[in-house]
Length: 282
Image (tube, rainbow, N blue to C red; front, side, top):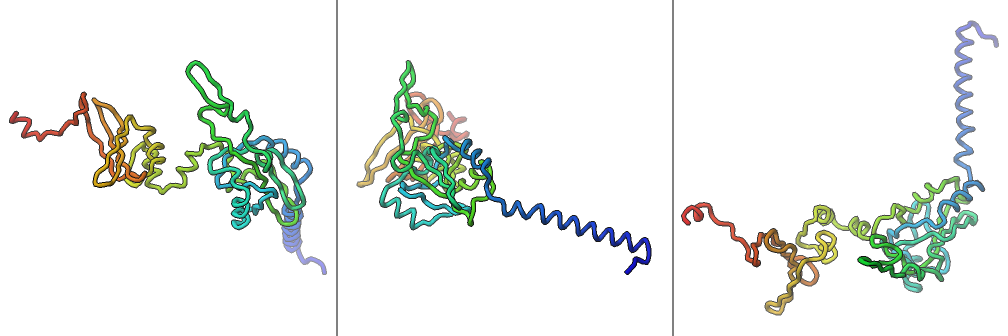
């Protein structure tokens, strides 16, 4: 059937061009959706991830066989608990781990941590370095604690391992490992109720905190004073020395029950705020 006019021919050409674009898009996107990891990508991942260090975001058990992790970061709680009961922890929250081997087996990407179950902390992680004014380990005074054990974890995929880069792998491991190298204290603070997070950030102490939270907020006290009254033992952590602001943090059974801030003169006497009228009379 012939086209009756140039307008009809233009309309047909327009429809055909749209159809061609759609077909091209489908042909372009389909292989990407089905693409498996290439040999080059495997080599790049091994090169970039070997010796990569991160901190544990959850309790990771030791295990002879690789502990499975789904692509969304979830894992079998029963399997991990069984391994923990049998072999103990490989890394606790905030402890530093190192990737020591990467393997690609079918639809599983297996990652060895700290040289596996027979590995763990090495002698050089405990070496003392002493100087005129400093002493520390090879990790440095501000570094994380190196995890005591090793294990294997395996990322599971549907049929085949998909195309990915090292950054994609880091993102998939994020529920388990933090590669931003944050300290154990930072990971601990993130899990606290918001009111305690704010207090620690502002370097203040509030009731309900425990000892660890107080130390994170104020560091170690200048003095500690214990007292027993009616069979109940309390401990005052005192921050500051006269003259100046002094903070009394009272703990009972390891929890803060009272916080008092005041000003102390030289000699330890607490200054009393006088009534303006009383001051005039004097």
